[in-house]
Every structure is written in C-alpha cells, then in structure tokens.
Amino acid sequence: MKINKIVMRQVQMPFKKAFETSFDSMKFKNCLIVEIHDEDGNVGYGECSTFAKPYYNEEFIDGAWALLENSLIPQTLAVKMEHPDETSKLFSRYRCNEMAKSSINCALWDLYAKENKLPLAKALGGTKDKVETGVSIGIQKDVQSLLDAVKGYIEDGYHRVKIKIKPGKDVEYMTAVRKKFGDIMLMADANSAYTLDDVDTFKKLDELGLIMIEQPLAHDDIVDHAELQSQIKTKICLDESIVTLEDARKAIKLKSCGIINIKVARVGGLTEAKKIQKLGYDNGIGIWCGGMLDSGIARAHNIAAATLRGYTLPNDIAASERYYAHDIINPMIKLDGTFIDVPKGSGIGFDPDIYYMDKFTVKKAVYSKKVK
Figure 1 (cartoon, one colour):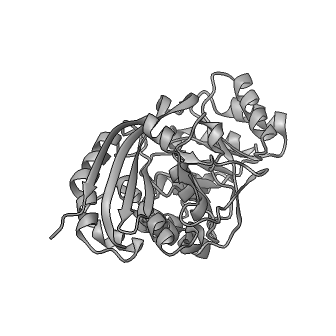
Figure 2 (cartoon, one colour; figure 1 turned 120 degrees about the vertical axis):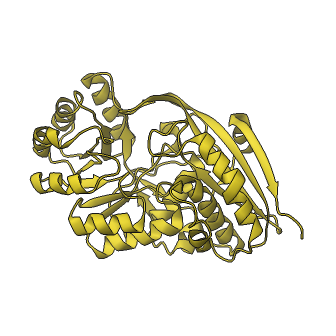
Figure 3 (cartoon, one colour; figure 1 turned 45 degrees about the horizontal axis):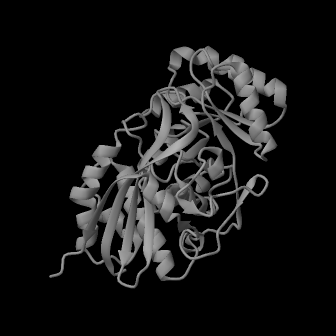
C-alpha cells in the first residue's frame, strides 16, 4: 500500500432523539473519521468510535485525537505497509487506546480491499451474503415508553431486542416486555451497573428466558463474572471486559461467560476481531458484533466482520435511520427484513456522503507523507 496522505476529522452526528445509558444521556454521536489515501487515488475509511468523555473505557475524543495526531498517524505514514495486520506490531508500544488504533487498522483494511478490488468481507475471509441484526434500546423513562419502543422495532423487522437496564429499571421493565411480546429474542445490557450483591435481581431475570445478560458487573472484571455465571442459568455476555485476545482466553478458561460481544473498535480493529472470533468459535462461545452507536463508516466495518463464521448470534448493527436522520455514507444502511445485505462493491461497499460529512465536521486536519 503506497500511502501518501491521511485526513482526520471530528464529526458530531445528531441523534433523532437522546440516547440514554446508565451513565449519560447523549444528543450527538461524537467520533473521529480517518481517511487513508494511496498514490493511486484509493481511500480507506476508518472510525474512532469513542465518546466525548471516557464513559465506556479510558478513551475520549480529545485524547484519541492527540494520540492519532502525535503518534499513530505519523508512524503509519513513516513505514511501508503491505497488510493491515501489520498494525498489531506497529502500535504494540502503545498501551490500551484500542479505539484509536482501530480507526487506522480499519481504514487500512478498507484501503487494502479496494486496492485488491475485493469486498471487505471477502478480504477478511467472510462467507455470508447477509448478516442478521438486532437492535439496542436505551433506558426509557417508564415501562409504557419501553413497550412502545419495542413495538416500533418489532414492526420494523427486528426480532432480537437488547434493552439497557439499571437498578430500579430492570426486572419490572424486562418482565413487561416478555409478557407483551412473548418469545422474541430478548436480552439485557447492564453496562456494569451491578455487583455480586445484586444476585437476587439476576435470579429474577433468570425466569424470563433471556438469551443473555450483557456485562452485568465491573467493566474490567472476569473473576466476579465467573462467580455470577455459576449462580445463574442465563448466559453472561462479556463486553468491556474483553479488550484483547488474552482477555478472551482467560474469560473462557474461568467460565466467566457463555457469549462474547466483539466490538471491532473496542478490540483494536478488524485484525484483532478476527482472532477473538476464531477463539470463541473453537471453544463453543457464542459471538456477535456489537456497536458504539456508530456512523455508517464503522457500521460498514461491523457488517464485514459479522460475515466471519464465528459470529453466530444476531448482531447490534441497526439500520442507520434508527438513530440518525442523516448518515455520512451513501446509501444509508438499510434492513432487508431482519438482515442486512453484505455489500458487493470494493472495500466497505459504501461511498462517503461528502455533504453530510462536511456538515457534521467540527475539526479537520491533513497529514502528508514526508518525502525523503
């Protein structure tokens, strides 16, 4: 890959309505978009999906910008890159900050696929023509609001629904959904809002036939999750706890979970996501692709990742219009029933929507390769 320029921009995409989790209520999706240009005019796109503040993990927009600008981008421009997998070694000196690393790795995968005239899914080794999807619903103000939200998603074709919960808005809310909508694929996402002292709450949720409870305990824990998993029937799905391949190996060995949510951004990009899904597949662990309320750029990468054989459960890759009136890709990602068609064009298979990309951009910088 003959890289000659990298462009980075911060975009603020307005949500259709505020998205509430156990830690914040957000009106905008802040993210960084990285464009890697080669000498032949090909452009690979990646996304740093971190939030404006370090709610999800240690990363945040301003910190990610600084690391990319001062370290990751200059280092990428300084070397001769043959394959995206090389970023694992290239960035190994920098601890954590996987979302910043992911933006470069994913942009390189897009560029690599375009240079080789391959759909990104094929370049990764994916085998599916469609990927199954579910949807994530933020914490609602009351039970009726939640039921209304679930009804809308089911009417749109989704049949796997993930509902954010927190103490005081858990058993009653999930029970109401189960009673109203019967045997839909239902799961709860706790965003680390509980401790082992709440085991009685989880035993009550056990009675609802959930397909999983996602990240109920501390964001960096696998030990207490193993203890909780031994006490409940519902499979625990680990999210934030799994950042590296080694994290996944340890969690599987300790029996901390039965399912892993692989967020491409969280694990450092597509290269590492491939490794973790293979480990999960080989050990009988359910795998699905999670999201970060992404723009269409990261959603496109997630679609490609979900074509790998290890991804066996419906994914958190909703249609663009679920969260945004306007996306920064064209066409916007749409559902075909409960599935998304895997693009057949080169790379991510979507073009950037330059108008909205520019409209939502609040900061931009261009970095050129130094000529020796």
